[in-house]
Length: 328
Ligand code: F6R
Image (tube, rainbow, N blue to C red; front, side, top):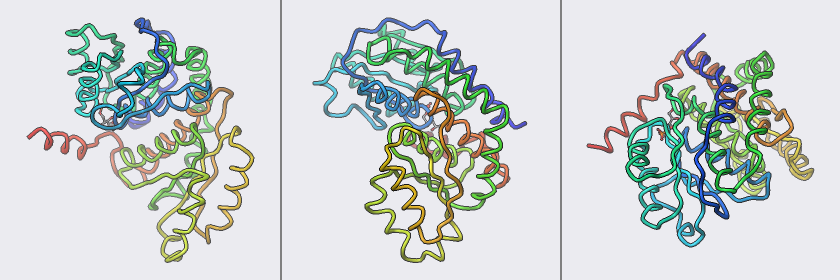
């Protein structure tokens, strides 16, 4: 067992921790804005998908400062950073505080936790761990609970519990089986993920990032129906070369509208022999469980790809190096 595999196995417990943790009271807000980058920003992607299922709006901001609309819209701002030291997220918190927006922090420590203590900002500390992306259950769960505290979403606790149950059953065998099959078809290739709608969009972004960071390999993602208006043409020239180096995985959800399913089938037929490594469907009932049912398969796949490339999935030295260089 590698360290990253051990960490993936903690995902159900992370989700259950979030279901049970005490959450600070936040002032009510009409919508949510999550600030976060990379593995922490994924918590925002989860919140966007979860809120969409409840006809509510959460926006994720993966950049410096705040989006231009935020000062007038007065969302509940949730800043997520595992280290608590990510400069983009810190700059957003400063901008939100300067505009007197409601800001809550979730982090393991660092400058954000210090700032929360100094300024009396609502704080939800998550348990420490070696890598932000291996804390997706803690970070996404904490973010959802904070957004619920602001009245932006509801029923996060049963959703987290269901997600933990679904991930547990997948970890008992099926996730490994599906990810092994995919790894056979994807090893050594550039992986392209196709999703559609909020749940599989969030999952596609997660798979891409996990293949990048754990697998140390390039990957990209696109969404139906938009990809049918451009990307599908891009497989045309040099198709023979693409066939040898790339492969696509479709991520699918039973709630995908019928026209999306028709598009996926037709697109697969028109892709001129480009390898489709698999079509992976969500499992579970609620949106959060369905999203995490894909997360666990993608996480395992990324570790299998790392093993096949003989790289260690855990360290992300080049990210640390860049962060150091930005401080010089
Ligand atoms: C590392 C990782 C990165 C970080 C990102 C932001 O595992 O996934 O994408 O999450 O560099 O750092 P934090 O999460 O500390 O705000």
